[in-house]
Length: 321
Ligand code: ADP
Ligand code: TRP
Image (cartoon, rainbow, N blue to C red; front, side, top):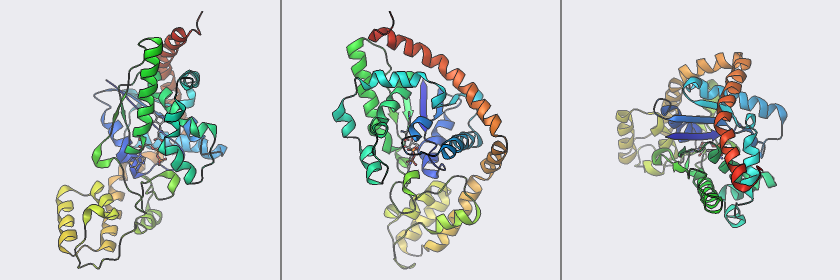
């Protein structure tokens, strides 16, 4: 089974990225043919700052390595180091239905949030389809927000197979319902582009500030509250032990849950949860050349899979003669 997923280096990676995708990917290291990559070409749709993109790419790679991804047990690379993906994107774009792309929420949401509408932003799902189909991935672990993009990839794969003959594996999304949408500090989906994140590797005062900023209602401590609709509870649940979570749930239901106190407890839980990874990340960032080397080697490995798929596609559509 080939499992593949990518992440944009468009800002500090956050606990929504971690629980929605990174943790699942890392857990598949031993049991799958695993493909993990940093999608710098996708990030270009929102980041037009040379240093931010370049540093963000190294940092996102260091994040994965620090969290335990072993490059010897998977294929781990930077998207733009495999140029085959761009050629495939073009071929697929000639099959991608306009109506389907026009219906994509992610495009509409990003524009509503102030990202300028460009052709790249519009055709973002086609590049994503190329990412997936180039490596013949069977399963794609993502957060719920990417479900529609997976449908676009499936649609394009089926269309291609129908028009040109069986070529692509039709990929399946893998969405973990419990962590499908981790809320941000404001209660909306946590997202780098919404400024509502708790970054994985933030620490000290910065982390405290973010956690204290988690929006809660004004219900007094002693009053009962609904844990299912509380933003703080949902984030707390990601880190607390089952026993502690049961206690806190009962405080919500019966009265006695103090938001300020729970926030401080959450601060300790998050600090401890990522303590080892934080130390490893510092070591990787001290040696960015080493991170770059790991990614280059990973791209060579990825190209071994990408090149034959592209050759087959060129053959099927009539570009080889
Ligand atoms: P962002 O929205 O912060 O820019 P990306 O679009 O780069 O994040 O997402 C990378 C991966 O993390 C995707 O699989 C996405 O579904 C997942 N993800 C992002 N935000 C969340 C969230 N709040 N909850 C669950 N998964 C998320
Ligand atoms: N669009 C995805 C996101 O924003 C990132 C991505 C790009 C991706 N290519 C991919 C995810 C291929 C899975 C597979 O989260």
